[in-house]
Image (cartoon, rainbow, N blue to C red; front, side, top):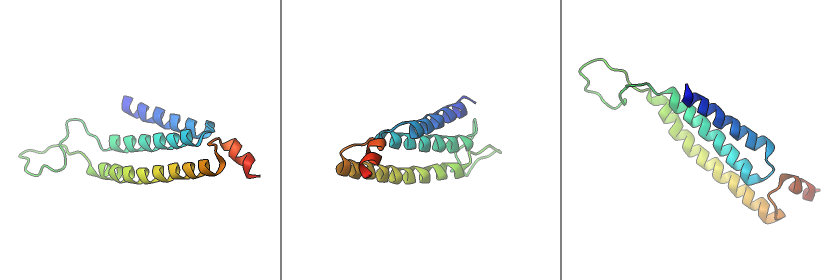
Length: 112
């Protein structure tokens, strides 16, 4: 139960950073925390206590196996998360080069 609570807390911290911070880098960190919370939650869904990895094939008795599908989804999500984080940070760098600030309110004011 505690790991699921940690996922929820991590998710809420990410939402808080996205909604309340004005710095683009802090917003990007909030998105990363959000992605990590979802990835951790998916990994926890597939976990079974005292279960074997699904690669063992010669087992003499009936055993519980860990579900490999959530693990594969998390690996894919990590790669996608890396791409979106790189894109988010590159956009932040371009905005900084143009406006010389990372503050959202200042950028909106300069746009007009």
